[in-house]
Length: 153
Length: 105
Image (spheres, each protein chain N blue to C red):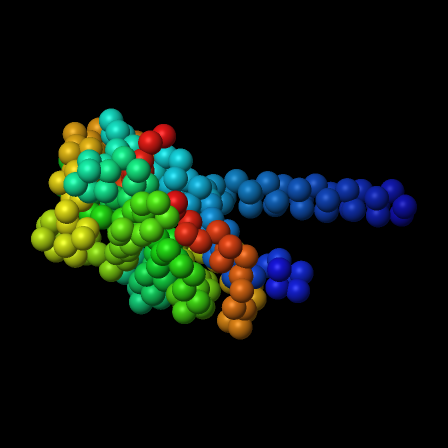
């Protein structure tokens, strides 16, 4: 009887292990911290010294640009999501755009204080190099956020 | 944080914001936080972008993000609802993430 109980317990433990292995095998691994993005964007310059007309070399700050890419990997254009520039601790520009449409905004669609930086930003990031990441499926329109900094390194 | 309770939507919202800021500052990437095509996803996305790009801490956006986290975040959807049982504290007005804003600088 003692052996029968031991054998039954052992069989039960084995079946539980098997069930757990099947559960583990059935679930798909999901990287919730860093989901794969279908495209990787690279640009020549991520640091810009501003000309005197736009604040000069003493100006510092940051721009977050949304690079818009179509499903085939073509560069559609860019939108300015954030532009923050200060000079000697005083804010020259402080712009945030969280309601921007998922289409390219024209230069004239921005406030005048932001629009004057548009051409310089375009010049600094174009041509955009776009690499395809085959492990992620592209959407009809894909948005890649790129950071550009102002001032000396 | 939150009387020592760890499993809260508040902590997750803050952790996703901070983690995304580190990644975007370093190599760039997507800031799609919300589920596409749902109202909760849209609210969550807009609130998270307000916190992510903002120069100052926006308490209203923080509360919107926290309250829509379970239903509207892509993270919870992709992880098949692992955060569904997490508690939500909508009265928290001084979260840790406040000290790190602006996240992009």
